[in-house]
Length: 320
Image 1 (cartoon, helix red, strand yellow):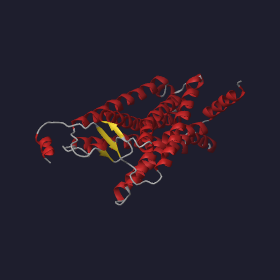
Image 2: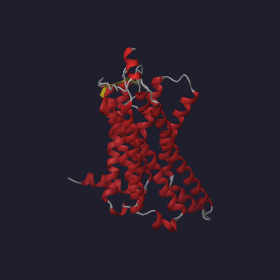
Image 3: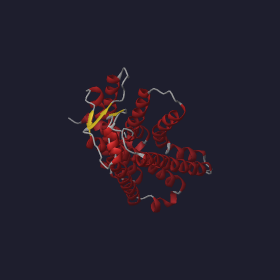
Image 4: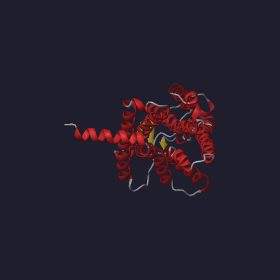
């Protein structure tokens, strides 16, 4: 108690050596779940790596659309790499301690790239919007330099924004518990352990979550509203179906990413008695599954990717 008063009455900042990640305290099948996540991680690496290789090695796929797909694939790999290996270490090998500075690094990488994931889906919506609603303006509004510029600006914005929100975590003192109830070094569970005022961190977290998830989602909704209006103005039914068919893979990715997030958010608002382990399990699945599914969807639904993937497999079979 005297230590707490000392922190509150002076400007001393206390940083612990590290934190203990203690999610899944009563989850009975944690080992099975970690083995499942190991499989998810391997699929994420292999299929996203394959997607990047196919697009980069085929010059005819060097288009704005597939640059956006490569951007999403790179984000998927980094996003799952930021959490799954550390989860396996913490919950499968029972080594759940993470040093303070490494905690901030994990926090930074995860939140930078989970935001970039939502923006990457918005970029793909922009590509579909231009292709269907403004086909004659493709060469003006959706070229490789323009797409590269959009991706670069969004990358810089998110890296700088999350750098600030992570840096202000060093202004907090941790003089009581160092047990983080989550599946990684999560922002809100960590700042709630502080024994000084964390109003700034809470404000940044709540505002950032709304802006950087709802902003891209709203843009996607508006894009598809315009696309539907354009499609139903087409006279030919075959033209309508052809235009909508080019959007299927993207709509699947949007659903896989946003629906679990909104369900978890609504459950947090209206279901008061949700089990803490179930909440951590739901959050971890919502985070880890989309980067695994995204490349599979693009491989199966996109004709250009599927054709080249099958050709690559055929070459591997016939090579000595």
